[in-house]
Image (tube, rainbow, N blue to C red):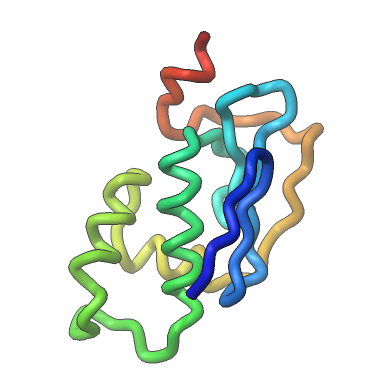
Length: 111
């Protein structure tokens, strides 16, 4: 699992999901499996880790990573099963014109 993180994008070698800096939001990020949400950078990294992890087969509550999955999902306001189900779906295009709902509070973006 390798995440490539730069100033404006995050990609993975395990999933086609991506994160990118939200247009017009210096500290806001969009993630392809969480459409309509604006996240802070740390939450976007967490979301990409979950997407990476969701690419593994046989992920269930007995899996050794499950406690981590539950904690990462909780950081995004989701349950482990919900996060894995969403991140397992093919990516949706990030539409810059789409009206954005509030995701995780982004204290930096308010600056």
